[in-house]
Image 1 (cartoon, rainbow, N blue to C red):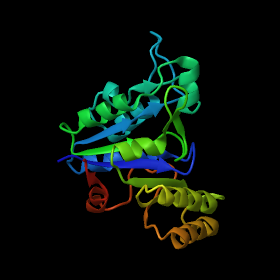
Image 2 (cartoon, rainbow, N blue to C red; image 1 turned 90 degrees about the vertical axis):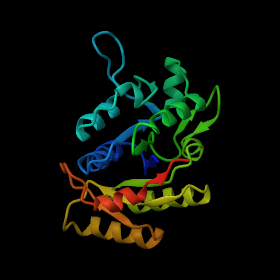
Image 3 (cartoon, rainbow, N blue to C red; image 1 turned 30 degrees about the vertical axis):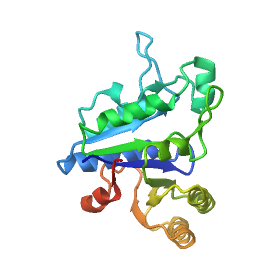
Amino acid sequence: MSKGIFITGTGTDIGKTYVTGLIVKKLAQAGCKPAYYKAAMSGNNRRPDGSLIPGDALFVKECAGIEQDLDSMCHYVYENAYSPHLASRIEGHPVEMQVVRQGFYSLVPQYDYITVEGSGGILCPICFDEAKIQLEDIIKDLHLSCIMIADAGLGTINNVVLTYEYMKTHNLPVKGVIFNNYHPGNVMEDDNIRMCQYMTNLPVLAKVQPGDTQLDIDVELLKNLYDEVK
């Protein structure tokens, strides 16, 4: 039976895709068959033929060394680096929940572990005009638990705690936090992590340093964070 997890973050540009690549790589190196999926991807470049390159998916694919087809990783790819609801308003092709659901479940028979990455922070609007779809609607529709990615630096206490409180209030289960951009021995970052753990009671799953090519987490612990797909 395939298992899944959702990767959310405390905001944009805190390293969700980078950490997700390391997660998928860890599973692949352990002999598992992992897959990556993202409902909507913004801020992408174009190929010479004009087609859009799903940049986040390409990064994860190359980082993890997996053979999964790029086309199966994301069905909504936008050029403008905006929230998907605004990018689709400008470019067309708005997100439909049924398409997201079908894309995710099409991976289930083929892969052991499916890692789903969110867009932006937990409150990111995915579609607004044609339908009201928030990121949390996708999490609930796919019946997934979450791992939160946060930057280890200044401001993270507020961001982690507010994200956690929102997710708790909205019944979005969080398995733990991975801190990105961590510098060992930095007194502020160490205290940030300690305070986040104290204020949320969430386990710290890993600390990712700049340039890391491996995720420092026991692979069996990582596997156990994934739930069976319903």
